[in-house]
Image 1 (cartoon, rainbow, N blue to C red):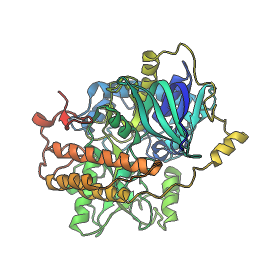
Image 2 (spheres, rainbow, N blue to C red; image 1 turned 180 degrees about the horizontal axis):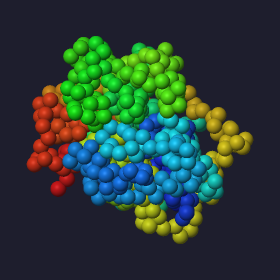
Image 3 (cartoon, helix red, strand yellow; image 1 turned 135 degrees about the vertical axis):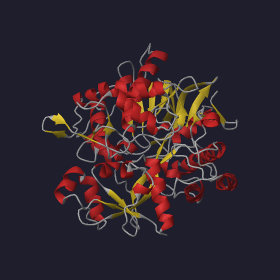
Image 4 (tube, helix red, strand yellow; image 1 turned 180 degrees about the vertical axis):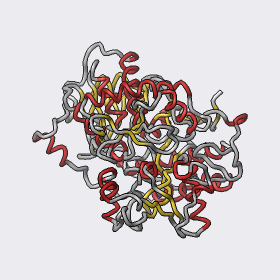
Length: 539
């Protein structure tokens, strides 16, 4: 007989331990007890993988208005201007706060060092340890979180669903992967900060945890999702046989990297006057076109004009990773191809992270604030997580004020401080052996890559929808994390394909060969989708 779920209560619960979740949790801890649930290790998030940097108008040559213009231009007519204004105006305050909390951004002497990436009109990208910016921000936020007594962090807790009562979200259900036990957690407010869904594609730069869980459980509970057709494909992922699609940061091209086809011809000038520094969607499609034209599986990224000393200092992690696969960036050209990278759409929110369901909030890549429009400007994602994570925390405290503190004895908490014996035990703890992914996992990922990828058309999209509907999902008495992840990916894959089929135009990262032009009159609006309803457009 299956034991009943263990029951807990906290003032606030945050799902996800990336930049958005941690920043919100730190904010929330001012007013009540907070439990952060992470489905893997606390440091295993897309934040920790972010190489390029974080964009902010803080340099002497920059202006907030220019950052705003660049963001809106990259968004291809679909940015929410009020959200963009908030992002760029509040960004400097939260970056300064990060520095005060111990984040070590790279400097030129005593001044912060800024670099430039594609579609930015100024050098405004802060980076840390060359190409480990996200990891450094996550380190600083986790260190801060560990100093707060009533901020609890629980690793290996997989959230399976939201608890909804009378249309209001009042908690979550989760599985402890270390012992398989089921739990119910009630809270005054719930924040989804579970990151993106890049694993829905066969080729992706995303970590294994990026299976869209927050978006899927929000949709299942009845929340509105928006802009699910807009998936950004990073142009340059390492294309070495047998190697994961390791991201080669846009900053490489910002530092002078050149794209060459298999015949070693530089080709970007044919596609855009900005050449290698064109927006990501343009560069990704240009690479695919060259791959098709030359019948090759990749193009080359050429950094050989830079010295070994420069590359080791500016891109230490990238340089060492390439070296481990037999490529010396100082002398060898790196084979690259596009891969799924960042989801612009997600759970629709207002400017404070509120979703369409009372009690439920979303921030970071899980949310669709409208900041990114149809195509994210490089290095705006960490900033969005920081700014809107904090704002979501502020809204949750306002909407669900704490009258009596709960959660003093939450399981596995308070969060162990780095270095003590409890921390060592938690760090070494591993989930019980999980079953392999069901066959549907690879079917979904291959189908999405082939038919709902960088180049789309109506026939392929309709075929993908029919094929997805025919896929048999795993059935078992006691589903584990992998079974839930497959169900989540299947649900979101259908939403993405349906949304892409409904948008009969090309805009930003969404390119339809049968509708190759942007159509503002019909489609200059955000798409919306809700359980039990067809894909529509905002009024």
